[in-house]
Amino acid sequence: MLFRFLLFAVTWLSVAWGVPGQESGDHYEALKQALGLSDAQVSRLQQRSPAALDDSQKSKLAVIRKTLDRWDAATVTIGLGLIREQQWPGSTQCMIYQIRAYASFAYATELGITPSQIEQFEQIQRAAGEPLWAQVREKDRQRSELLHSGVSKDSPAVVQLGSDIDRLQAQATARPRHDLALAVLNAAQRTKLAAFETALQAASEAIDLGLILAPPKGEFLCH
Image (cartoon, rainbow, N blue to C red; front, side):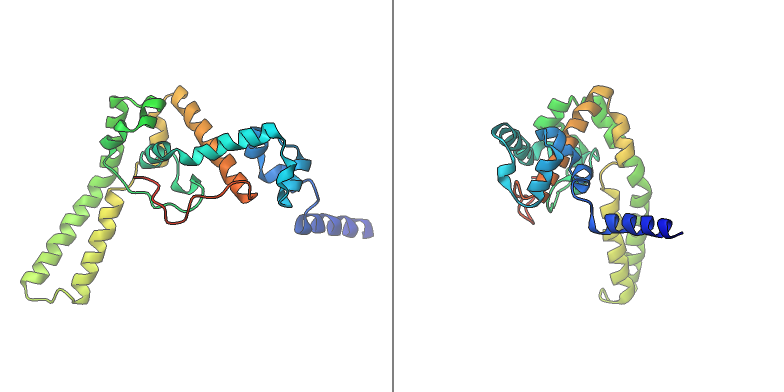
């Protein structure tokens, strides 16, 4: 009985306080793979020791940093619903374009997006948006009727309908749903996308360790 209690206590303390060398192997896997880091190096980096990196690793880190300059890639992948906006390191304010506009971006060509696939992305967005646009039209009709009947534009009912219309319009123009968007890609395209996602994850982990700076907050990602 005493042995079981001691074993429980040791296990709890290991989780609560962390066992040196274990957490570093769990939380920075993408960066470890990209730079070839050992757990000991990660532990030193967690203590904010840049000297833990050798010249080769610093060169690889510079390549990872350049991922944050791939505005075109971020614009296409976020805009088409292929990655989530939260995957981009730092804070983003991503503007939404018409689906067809993404075909003109360099990364769409790099990824091999075809006109047929652009049409599929449009169909996904249209199918999701049509019921919402129907609600927009109905609420707009209700608001017009209230205004024509003499109700003030500042009345709670009219204001609420305006708020509902804005919300529904935002939902109707939202990016294609993530799982449906991924299904549009072929195997080779998904492989390229996975490499970009891995680079973003490594960049996020490098930011967390203070090795590179995050993009400035409030900076427009998609422009």
